Image 1 (cartoon, rainbow, N blue to C red):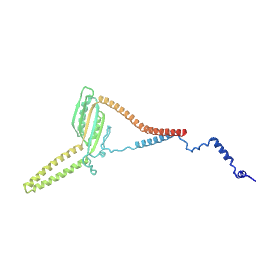
Image 2 (image 1 turned 180 degrees about the vertical axis):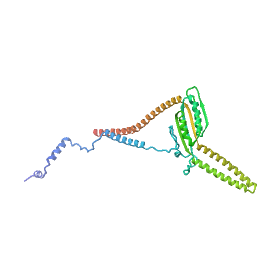
Image 3 (image 1 turned 135 degrees about the vertical axis):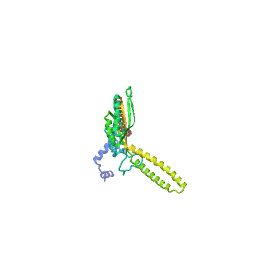
Image 4 (image 1 turned 60 degrees about the horizontal axis):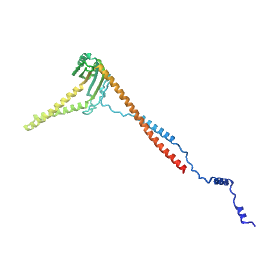
Length: 327
């Protein structure tokens, strides 16, 4: 008769040899814990490099876009410093007073010019005579003039304020420019057609009102009515006089161009010109340096911030990894 031990031994399953070997190996190792799978840790240098490259590309794109777009501002005056500059009346801006009057066929342009001539002080008398001669040849006149000659260097000079018909402005400037060396020349033109039309319309209205008051005065039947009409006539007459003076002044300003001629010593002008050029060069160099520093700061400061933040995150990540390893 079989015992219970024999029966149990027969029905007990035989373990897999591989499983037995694996369990024995774990027993010898003390059953170590399984580590969780993690993504490979990246150092802070690759992260910093990618961030810096991206930020630099964005800054360069923004800089190029900003340099390509420059706001355009309308020109409100026509000026030039080139001695060969010519003002085109078609592009003269409207005046500040009155409307633009775009439908007016005849434009009223107020022109002015400034001319600086440099010569030897011994030639000032002859140049002054030539200025008077050229002005008279072009049906103009000299409004005022001054001429100073001193023995001190740079003490000699002269100035002339001329009135030249607008149609003769360019020929006159050409002849004046040939009298001596041209140091500076500028011209400007202002369209005052709107103001001229406004004054003309107000003058016509005032004259029509005065004519109406004169007719009513002839038909007045009482002294009271006549006195009232005469008071109004005095007011309207004063208005007509003011408007006529404004119209006459406007005609003179547009029919005659104002020309300022300045006569300077050529030696003093050369010294002053070289000094001004040196000062302008120094100021330009400082502006270039300041612009470079500002642009460099605009690039380096963001990069420094990104680098600091990346370094801080990388330091904390390494500290946490050490803490986990020690735990």
